[in-house]
Amino acid sequence: MPFSDLREYISKLEKMGELVRVKKEVDWNLEAGAIARRCNEIEAPIPYFEKIKGYSKEFTVLGDIINTLKRLSIAMEQPTDLPYAEMYRNLMQVYLSGIEHPIKPRVVKTGPCKENIMKGNDVNLYKFPSLMLHDGDGGRYIGTAHTVITKDFDSGWVNWGCYRQMIHNRNHLGGYVAPPRDMAIMLRKYEERNKPMEFAIAMGTDPVVFAVGISPVPYKINEVDVIGGIRKEPVDVIKCETVDLMVPATSEIVIEGHVLPGVRVDEGPFGEYTGYRASPRAPRLVYKVDCITHRNSPILTAVCEGAPVDSGHVANSIARAATIRTDLVNAGIPVVDVHVVIRSSGFLTVVSTKTPYSNIAHRIASVVWGSRAAQSGSHKVMVVNDDIDPFNIDEVVHAFATKCHPVRGHHAVPNAAGHPLVPYQNLEERLWAKNSLMLYDCTWPIDWPVEIAIPPKASFNSIYPKELQDKVLANWKNYGFRE
Amino acid sequence: MAAEYDTFVNTLDELKQGEEIELKVRDTATFETRIVKAIISSTKSKLPDGDVLWIRFSRGLLHKEPWAIKIIADLGDGISS
Image (tube, rainbow over all chains, first blue to last red; front, side):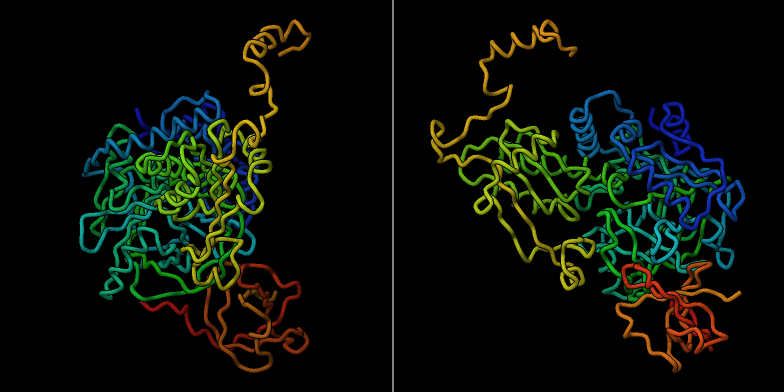
């Protein structure tokens, strides 16, 4: 049975030792963020802050909820005792199964997210203990682990995505949305007509909702159907109070309102998933909040983004690798494995492949960069032969260092589309969302004579006869070694 | 106790001292941004009755020394809705 809400997931995490209840009072101003950040960096249990300074115990904050493969596997009811590569491949398959076998949501008439309702002048975003996550951020970010729901102006497409949101005041939020992202595509249609765009924000949902919201689900496919496909059960949704949108009925908090057309107010900076605060404070879109509903004792979720690893790195890596692998297979590439390296903030994608023809690495890179999965990452593509395991970073580093020619193996692509968060771009490039890409071809050229040009690899698995390898392994303990 | 505000700039040259200017400042207690008419100075003694103004560069880096600010008028939050 999938989790019906965040609270069931919390109980499961606690039973598995993956969550710590922080009973000591912590300050919303940086202290909780610092704890959550350190938890991310050392892969500690998820912090659940039960007493926030200045707030009653009714208002709690849960840290990063799916920031390891194990936790994402728990969220998706998958085995948690697999080796890294197997767990990664399994989660890729689960994600793809949701896309291939979507299940429409089920509309319900009542739900716990309606237990408390604030409208009009009663709306107050400060009712919730939003965190000042990093020193120097532009403000308190209430939206870091949530789902922003908007609908297309001229079709039935409804987008469920995750876009950062900073509190401006009691009833306004500001946010950044990268130009190629679905919500930006939708907003352009409304703004061309000077129309406000309705939104609903669902916070504290079943973790699969959040995981899919940060994934590159195919264009114009409703994420809620994919979530149903992954859960193998429909998501129970309920109509909003003031906008024509549906939200998960068990959400902890729901915020409703309109994105104001053409209005831009300074937002940011914010410590982002790249591990840096690369984009400046700048005029960005504004959400006017008309209504807030929430459960009794609502749980606010917060991801303290930054240097790996956080939830975005994990869930997004899996979905992007699955998407890229599908795109490569559909292009006829004899791909073996795809790994969007989690600790690269998703910037580095390693592809292992057979090499039936010359320069296949260029075709692979072209497919990757043309993929929807590369909208916010995979700027650097490394292609390796099929004897390299892309999930084994030691093997990947060795292949890069020894097989990628300093001149012929590096292929830079300037003038690509990008976004302002890319740290290595200069200020002008970040301002205009320009990017540059790089292919590292770590495959042996196929026109090199095998007998004389390709150096035999001097590793246990490749330079000894198979019979001798078997003998050595069989006698390993007899030689006096433990394992 | 003096109130504390901060403002974001690309360079210190953007901040005109000793004359009335419009400036976006955040109250560091709430992190709400207001547009204010104010006089600012890098030297506290030139605004003895002023509040504290911290300066952050556009990506959040804090300038080491605080400035002083005397707010003359609150012009709103700059959000038209």
